[in-house]
Length: 136
Image 1 (cartoon, one colour):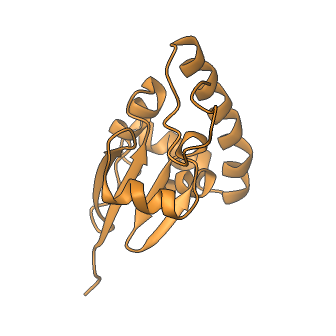
Image 2: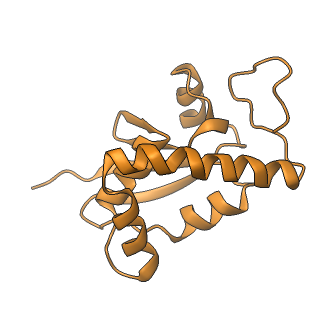
């Protein structure tokens, strides 16, 4: 019997693009249950991400069991465990199933996200508490 992992996706809940993606991605039920965590709220997993030195403003984090996947690795891992049903999940799978392609596309998407949040006047999460790092 395969053990189902705890799977948590940590993202910026105030980012419309991040929210759209995270609420529409579906993982295969054999992988586990996906829980969405807004990085702007204090939680055990956000503290774990901070302790690992990962800047949540620069990439989403996927936690599978005890493993943290960050940025392009997170979106690649999500593609590999996602269902292939529905246009959105198929598109995500075909775009991000390759680690090499994910590493190319993710920074472009992150730059678009950062520009969107700057236009919307959002503040950074700044989970690493870097001084003078509150604006996009």
